[in-house]
Length: 144
Image 1 (cartoon, rainbow, N blue to C red):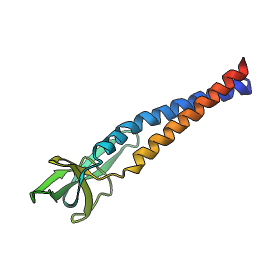
Image 2 (cartoon, rainbow, N blue to C red):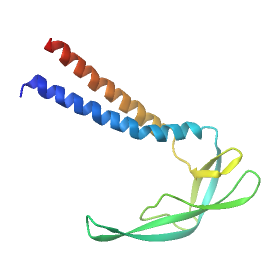
Image 3 (cartoon, helix red, strand yellow):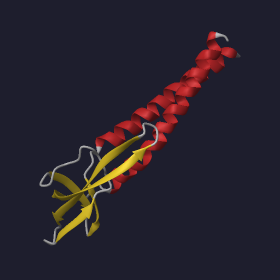
Image 4 (tube, rainbow, N blue to C red):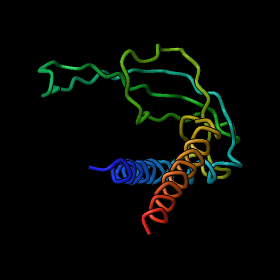
């Protein structure tokens, strides 16, 4: 296989990987934009639920901790919800965490995430896709 052909395949693979990364970051980016004007509150871990899952690849039982958060909305109503995020080790009862929800919709509460991480990942993926495509175009022009 010639060097030019090898570079072409590598550039095509790079473009495909970057497009996949870009597609994976879009939902997170859109969610970040949606929560841009959100209400920020501090929640506290009030309860923990432990779940065991069997991992077939390692033949081990894996323990996950799922926290229940309690917080007070703008109207002074105390609310709680079970987080979708599971981890091990998890937080301890009494730990604080930053939460956010859409104004007027306390049921949209979620654990606050950074605004820059999804944007940075999207931009870097787009730049990588462009760089890979540029290499493909240069190699194609040299061929003719």
